[in-house]
Every structure is written in C-alpha cells, then in structure tokens.
Image 1 (cartoon, rainbow, N blue to C red):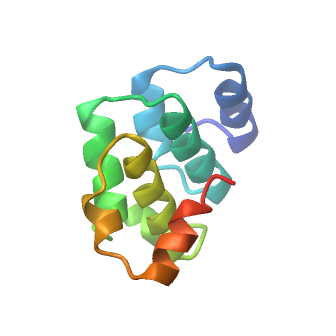
Image 2: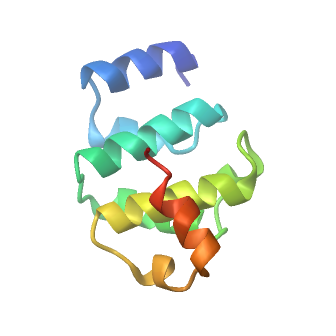
Length: 107
C-alpha cells in the first residue's frame, strides 16, 4: 500500500477513486483512517461496499480497530461517518456522552 503521506495528498486534492477509499479504510495509519472517513462523510459518498466496511468498523467487526487510534475512537468516527451518510442506527444506540463524542468527530 502507498505511504500515508501520498494517500493524504490524494485525499486533500480529491485524486482518489471509490476503490482507493475502500483500500484506505484498511490502512494501518490512524491519520489515513480518519481522513478517509472524513472525506467519505464530507462528500456523502454513498457506495455500498464503503458503507459495509464502515459499518464493520462501527460495530467492532473490522481489523481496523486493532490499528492506530484506540478502537473506541475510530469506532466513533465510523459511526459519525455513517450518521453523515444518513444512517443513525448505531448512533441511536449510544449513551449521551458517546453521542457527544460522535457529534464532535469532525469538528
């Protein structure tokens, strides 16, 4: 996989495909994971494979949780991404403190 700094440059410049985003969600760099989720949320990218991958992260069923950021943090970023894409199922299950964390994920 590409080095994190090249991926970061692509994400910032918008030079990526949906397939790239899917692959970046498996990167072992926490910044790449966060920035990829942020790009997906900001651009409201509605791709079924991306949504399935993000859902696995949000529910703790993905290897990404064992990398980089503490698992609970990346889980909340994934839930924030799903919320931005119109899926509130996982957000609704959180307590008020966790909801506040999710609401501040992209602040």
